Length: 526
Image: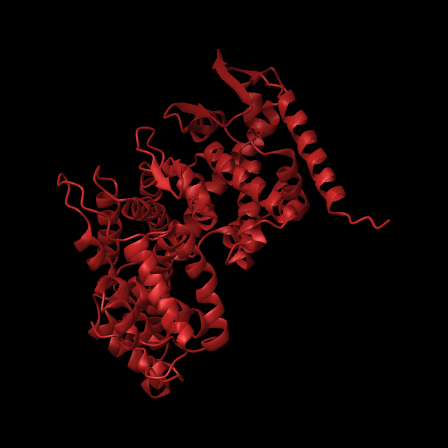
């Protein structure tokens, strides 16, 4: 692979500041020789951003060839540098088709070199040759999947743009024609099977007994990324299964700085990774009808973020401008979950935010109007179709306006809405059942405007829809009532409510701490 930075930078590769040379030399030393986490953290999170803002705010960094003398031509480090600087470049300019394909080759080279240096399973542990801080490991994998998602969307958009002018090719722009031709010549670019291969291989090599700390970081963050990928593809069961290695109680502790942490603590220590895991697993649980697990996952991260927003802690994290958007999307998901899952699962403060933000939508739903779709469209991820289309079809008159004849995003929305249509009937049934301790099947069926024969299957359906697998691998229920049918009579018992006094006291303690913190921040001049 040759690196293609030279044509993108206004600063000559031969002439660049000494601070750039010093940065490259120090980062290479920290990652390949000294392995001092604090030094690498300062270089990666601080110095790189400072130099970028000063010299390269809207242009590319020097090419890897130009700085290779500062790292002794270290091939793996040059691949890491290339990924880091390309990531910056794609964040400040809109990538074209060539940029996207170049990004694919950059990641392939990086992962191939990482896997080449990884010890083989069963072999004696090699001396550590690479050290990357957890934040750097996650950023590499997060950007890898972000670019995959962007490429899939670009591929579909380009196909649709070409298909619209199939009957009138003279109206097709040159950019669309060129992009379609390049995509046809690079059908293996960002192939989903190759993306899956790299993520699974990184998980495999990083969970071996002889894996170094860096490869273990890469393994666990790869599982977070794999969970996100499976969610975007609509395989929700695989999305949850990808996280098994993180929740494995038998997993060895990992050295993170001077501390020893579990895989779960490692992921929670890098907030963007924790947020990605919570959001995509929350969506997957929702689509699998595991409403209590989804509510618990999304509710806990929203509660953490709410406190972080109050203290200002989250604003210090790079990329914090995206946190508010994702918080609002998760609150919308919680509005759906709290409405279809009558069992109380949310903290009072989060439940209050849900009511304040989405009272209108929930009122529409109660009135029998559509409201779920608006919430889900706002809150769901941008699903992708990873299949490579036949680009030649986009040039034929009368072709389908979208590749594969369907839109992956609309397909998932339709699947969700099919489920919600069923819940509209079930919610009405439940509302009548909560008013009685016993009621005849015929009478209850008439309330729901159904014949008895038809209604009996709905009684079974309500039980089935609200039964769900829970995190302890046992079948639980999301219902707040218990009912059974005997001699054509529906007997209803209200589920026993567990009064949680500790929640009240913990909330008051938290409020007291917040007040004390505000008082301590007040400067009193005598």
